[in-house]
Amino acid sequence: MSYYRGNPEDMVDALGDLLETFRRPAWHQKAACRGMGPDLFFPEVGGRTDEAKALCASCPVRSACLEAARTSRETSGVWGGLSSRERRSRRPDAA
Image (tube, rainbow, N blue to C red; front, side):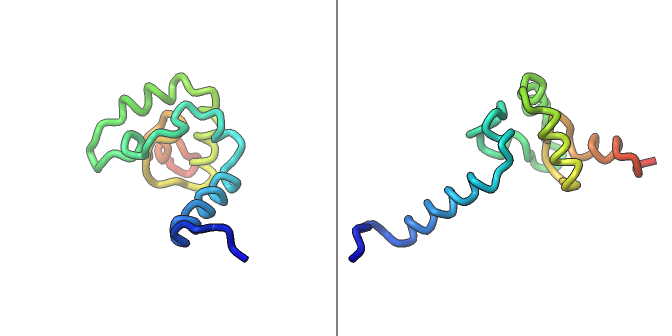
């Protein structure tokens, strides 16, 4: 007997969101950007990143965020206060 009376697709979406929450690293819970949309951190090519970097500057988990981006070799967006170009230029193999 099923007690869920809503749209099954909504239930699947909600379960997917819950699973995604469990897959995230613990530091995500303390991030200054938690709950914000991605537009600020993933601007269009040539877009401004100063607002994202300003938020990152006060973030208590900035170093963990930056390390995660470096470890995964994230190719876009602002992570830990650095743009993708800045992260690439600071990699040891960038010389």
